[in-house]
Length: 152
Image (tube, rainbow, N blue to C red):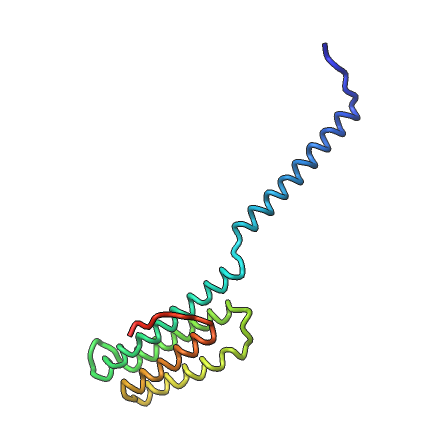
């Protein structure tokens, strides 16, 4: 025996079931989206990793600089200056991604980069160059709140 359901009741049920499905789908989408999206701490960690990599590359330049002074390893003032320029470009990307840092935050590292490049141009001693790299890596670490172990 079949029961007759009026057309209005069928339409009402269909609309209610459809609305419930949309609400459930939106809630599930929101929950999944929030769970899979990176948070602020993830973004900060990514920027700090970029800054840490730049500091490490600057720190390692002292070895290449010493080789360039000795005329070994195919290193020259130009290759050291190019490496400093690449590190500066990489750090600029980190600054661009670090939207929470004020624009003035670049001042300390920009000046230290300029001094390090001038040291290469002037042909300072390896010990003085190490001092310059330590100054720059210290400025990077303090600006970005990076803590890292020294490789030297």
